[in-house]
Image (cartoon, rainbow, N blue to C red; front, side, top):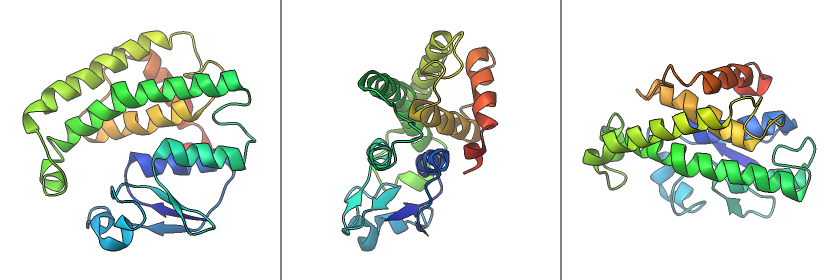
Length: 203
């Protein structure tokens, strides 16, 4: 297998996932800033041009972060980063989905339509007028999650999972694109500090 890597929170998430599992794969860096992901070679790997991409041994390709992590978990079930039982897996996927839809998507599009507009406007339809609302929605949902994780070590309780990695990479990314974590999100701030101490956080 080969991992097509680049800058950005999504490739970082998969690197973090692999680090937690001790998986090492050959990597090829794709120049995202230079638009290499929109060139024919990469579009042959994934027609949407997204990053990252995993090339399988048979020459086929997997995109979508959660799909790549699901696949790696099936190949390397220990240590479990999604879950060891149907209930654990369902819980992790539920929270991953919630974080993706309620926090990651509005945060990402809020950035793309504002600070990232000059970079993205030539690559995708952009709606700058919606950026403030999207950023506000992401912030509101972070506050809600802050309350929901009170008393928990991680998103799924005592288990460190893909849901934590998803949230961690995007909360940290938000801090670099003028969407910092609000000071009243004390539970998330404490959680973020715990996750940042894990060796995989530097992957």
